[in-house]
Image (tube, rainbow, N blue to C red; front, side, top):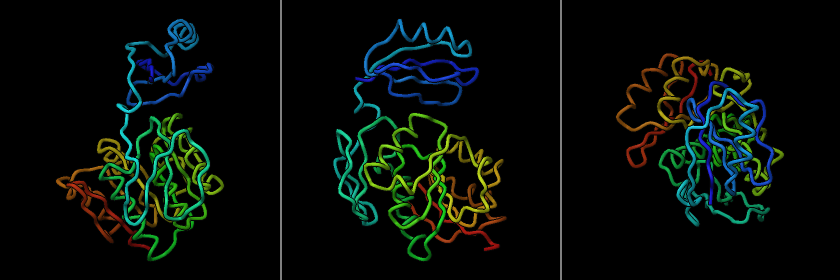
Length: 265
């Protein structure tokens, strides 16, 4: 079982809880969610006294399978995605992606994840990007795909420490940890985008819309963007056509993924 303490957040905590049953923290909007393997009411309330910017608003529990359902094995663009439990280093294979059963999003089941994998396959088939940025990495599945397709360095960023923890575990399982560098962050402003050959942004529409309107993504040579339904395609293309053109677009179950290239490249 997972036991979750939901807190309204006026700022980040000074440090995460230190407890053997603590799994990690997930940030969403103005809330922080703290995951434990067992109920820890007394410990957590004592820890909250040291973090006045957090206010406990809810507590609940659920079986991990309700947080995210993983398939035992699926195939996307010639890559086989397999979940493993307990996590362990698996035999190295360029065509198999191993994921631990965890709490972060990105199992390969969602149409936008599939679309990004198809787009990555296409991008790497024409020229191999040396440096790839995966913004909002989640479980790290797209970062791992990029590493296995031949990228020399993949920078995987997420606002959630729990996601980065699972990314590192999944990178280790897939024997690509030396190729992947994790970074805590929201958006693109903290990265030297002129040094990035390909940026991947599979984000929920509110976040993607904010990034496209306010962030310096125009510096990216090549982009894969997803996370929006097909009816928003004209909006997204309108936000991107000034600096980039659509090299390829993919539709999977009414969800769109665009592969964009800079007009200056």
